[in-house]
Length: 402
Ligand SMILES: Cc1cc2nc3c(=O)[nH]c(=O)nc-3n(C[C@H](O)[C@H](O)[C@H](O)COP(=O)(O)OP(=O)(O)OC[C@H]3O[C@@H](n4cnc5c(N)ncnc54)[C@H](O)[C@@H]3O)c2cc1C
Image 1 (cartoon, protein in one colour):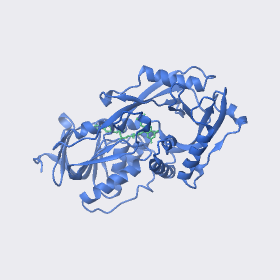
Image 2 (cartoon, protein in one colour):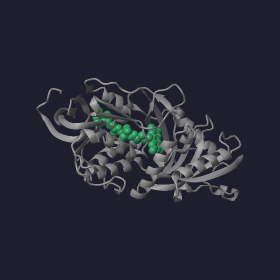
Image 3 (cartoon, protein in one colour):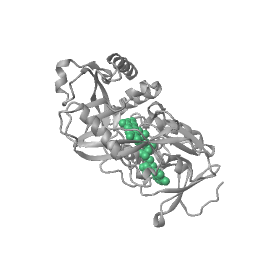
Image 4 (cartoon, protein in one colour):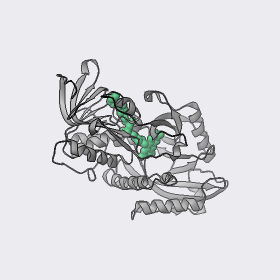
């Protein structure tokens, strides 16, 4: 047992560190299961990766190529729950895959991939896909027509990642969860039956106790774990930067799923608010996650990809750019082939559980797995709701403190 700190200001069943989508999801699941919950966030809700993603709620068609079938199946299941529970935040969007003479993946490969994707989706309207008749190609937002051989259309989901995170957190708060923002965690002391967490700075500094602590700090996961005593091993991961640019213009038809002309990587060209969002990249990152920004090279790479596929449009006028960090298992190879599954790493007798990686789409499934780990460690409580059926309306304003 750690030295007990007399000025600990509150006890919770579960203390969650980080108010990204995973922290919000765990808080919602735990509050729905009847636990008392506190979320501590060093900045603002969704200030990290959860506002810098590609904003897709999808199974991840490309993960079929690397054989991640169970991940795709899980994400497709979660996608249909989000279509049902968050219709104002997650909407089905048509995706177009153009195949040119030089495209690496051939039409038959795309057809096989989409058939498998539809099979994993099950009997739902979003499972349908088709090869677009040539007569409809000119309607595709000025998509380059030279050497175009086929265009496939299928359906996936699009969201506003920060708004979704805020909605999940607001749902957690409506079930009784508490939130403190601008409250960085500075120390975690794990004992046999309880953990103590120091957070905040100067006048706001405080100590909280909890039956279990969930480390949902995204790319900061290992620096957070390093704050814990007794010291515990971290998992070996790489941070891989992914950038997006927002350019002026509008897309009428939907999202274009292209292969970057430079290296064949998947790049999405998407309608987004007042412009067109293009992303993403994959670039090793070794610095401080707080400093990640899109580099000049990444901006040029994404601009070139857009120009290549939409040559009739004006040259890209860049309105904004942003970058986020993937947390991937350490490896030497192409990040594309590394598992995108979420890893749960239990230390300190299971009382500190760290979440590594994962998908925005699968946050609820991840939260369920976290709760299954928490159950044996926490006192019995009466469930209030099931996250499978909880509606997620847009939060009135940004999720505030409670
Ligand atoms: C470029 C890119 C594109 C992506 N696109 C998609 C997509 O289209 N669809 C999809 O499903 N998934 C996508 N993902 C994956 C998805 O975005 C992430 O898995 C998810 O957002 C991670 O959420 P998180 O809560 O784990 O981390 P974060 O959102 O980073 O949240 C961690 C939080 O912890 C806080 N924190 C850190 N340290 C402390 C501390 N000491 N004290 C208190 N708080 C702390 C941070 O401030 C932050 O708010 C993408 C990821 C990237 C990088």
